[in-house]
Length: 182
Image 1 (tube, rainbow, N blue to C red):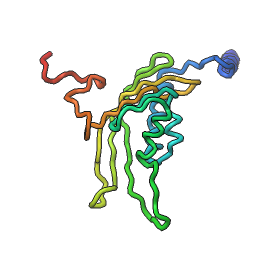
Image 2: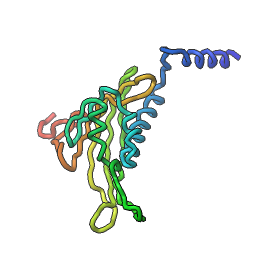
Image 3: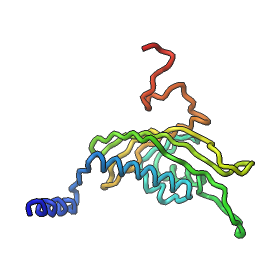
């Protein structure tokens, strides 16, 4: 009975305006990883609304095409990226596409802020020989904030290690300068 009463009190407190629910690390990690995964699926699908819902109003996207400040600039930058802006003829029976994958999430949570990094790679069937191939690889370094109870990207730095950003080492991934003896 005591357990039921405590659960009801906790639920009532969560429903009050301005009362934050304190998630466990596991819950926050799952929410952040899910945000990142939904974001990538939406990028590939051209679902710009879901992509934009992942961003804080003052978010910053630092990627291979420049640095976008704020949601309006991010929306403009991503409006033709991934599956966005794809038009197909009415008689199309297939579609060539890119698929982005995320792996190895490392997430630290500090109250209503978090940092995350993950490896990513992209596969495509947009090839001259019609086969699927690995096209790009890199990693994300993210700063997130819990805003109105939802995790949002405050800053996302995208390293495309197949094109630009081919650094000798990445401190954000915990790498050290391999030229220096320890």
